[in-house]
Length: 322
Image (cartoon, rainbow, N blue to C red; front, top):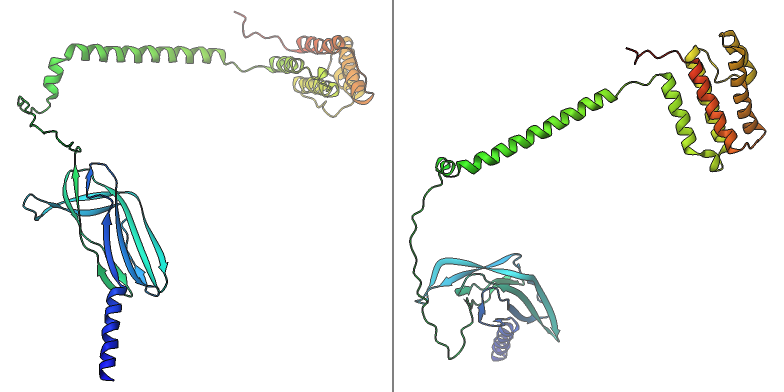
């Protein structure tokens, strides 16, 4: 019985050792600078085992191998071309874990990539190191490489001297600075001229000018040709009433046509002007309430009559009189 127990323990230890097998491989051992190479780490273990591997995100550190075969303090970095990928393959009561890096190097030499560690059931295991040689150019067979001899002339380093540079190139520096200053003066003079012109053109419009501008804008909109005849006459009536309200300091916006005639007569306007104003307002009322549709020539004539009334009733403008 005792021998049977020893036999079972021995077999169990053998199975345990076999159940956790670590291996590593590369797609090639010799690569050119910038050429990608695949590094795979493989673990064969029981299906119920728990694995934990800390993958690298940007690069993998390596050690440089010198001519004597020993590791130098000089190190290098193998850059990750693609993100780390791992795969688990179930094989009955066991499983195979495969972790793969795709890396490349940008400096030639022989390198040793230290084996990473992996945790299996909270127990740490380490992969073996991998050797990769990185070369500049792939050497062709049956072609001898000869040393390239080049002749160089040593040029002593001289610190940059601003004063020497200015003395050597003063003439074109003067030309460039002169052109810059001249361009700045011309641009500034033109800006001043535009500002002066704009100040001269800016003059507050009086009541007469504002009203004429409003009538011209209304005629230019041609609302009567867009099916908005009523809106045209409503706006024309409002412009006329607003002008008379401001001109004589009275309120006509809410008055009827008859009330407007009485108020304007009391202001001293002659009967002919008052009658013309009343006809314009009555025409607007006909369009608004009786849906009258006058001809285009009649519509434009109403605008002309409003301009005449404004010209007749506006005070004289002495701004341009010497």
